[in-house]
Amino acid sequence: MANQRDIKRRIKSVGNTKKITSTMEMVATSKMKKVQERLNQSKPYEVKVNEIIKNLMAAGFSTIHHPLFREVAQPSRCLILQITGNRGLCGSYNTRVIEKTITFKEQLESEGKEALLYVIGKKATSFYNFIKTSMFKVGLNAEDKFSFDDAAKIGEELTKLFISGEVHEVYVSYTKVFSSANQKPEIIKLLPIAPEMEIDHDVLPAANMDYIFEPSPADIFSYILPLYLKVKIFTCFLEASYSEQFARRVAMKNATDAAKEMIKELTVTYNRVRQDKITTEISEIVGGAAALE
Amino acid sequence: MERVINCSILTPEKQIYEGQVGFAVVQAHDGEMGFLYGHSPLISKLGIGEVRLNNPKSVDYLVIEGGVVEIKDNRLIVLAEKAYKKSDLSAQELESKMKELDAQMNQMDKFSEEKFELKLEKDKLKVRLKVAKR
Image 1 (tube, each protein chain N blue to C red):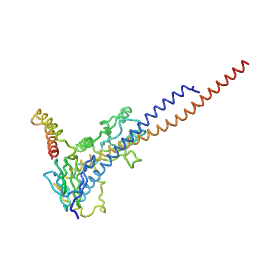
Image 2: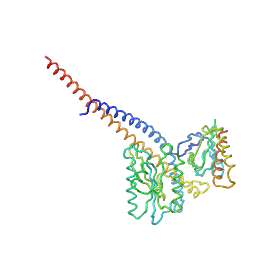
Image 3: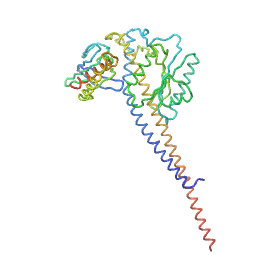
């Protein structure tokens, strides 16, 4: 059994680790709350943009001619935008997204499509380098400094690639927030814009047909579609960032709990060793005294 | 019943304004556009310019930079790409930025892509300055 001093040293070191993990937990919690706030603030905008697109479609304006809707008959080159974190210590957050992306990539390849990777996040980048998978482009995750302008830049870049015909489909792989305690990695199709925005006739009253469009539906349409993409990418990033902070918080909480448990066990061992030592010493003294008589 | 419209101004980052106004003027893509109670449903593209929200007692000034406006059932929604409240802008800061831009522009060739971008930036600054001085 380890001696008294060794155990004491271990208790101290575990205690230090516990301090660090519990601080990180608090930091992650506060960051998570901030992102949640931003997510809530940006939600009405997204909803509204969707609504206007729906209204435009309800106005009988044909969408199929817009280049962003154009589907290639035989898509052979796809781009996957993967959003992950820069840092580790967040449980299985990064691995889960990477796993999902790789499975999806293999699936595309089995269909005879070429899949390019656009990776955001330092952790994932170094992982792909490690398994020697080539990436189309890499970028850092701006984390809490991420602004709408950054999303706009990525959106424009992807749109350009798509319109020039360099890639035929664009997907986003990120962690979707289903509820405040439930996030799962998801892959969504970004381009061509799927006409999934079905018009629910019950929700839209007939009065919607009377909209005046200024300058013209087509102009507004070609303006709002890129905006829609940017907003979509922006919310994807925010959701990914929320999930990352959530995952980190959970991981750090577990680590803190484990450290607490460990300290408890070590203290018990320490006391036992100490008691043993005292008992041995007493019996030695008693034995020594008996020998003198 | 009071003849007011519900107005909200949103950007992707946050909600800038929410409230009831009597008369609203926004900068549309080709000029200013005014909204009163009972306006027919309309969707329009926005330009770079100021937004004036008139209440019986006060007037609120904001800057918007591109976006879309929608009015329906006396509910006005401005979806701006960027928006600033008057209180968020400081005239002094903007003026010094303006000078910086001018200096940069003077150093450039007569026609270049960068100059065009700077010109756009300057237009935005001008509007912000105008609102800041209100």
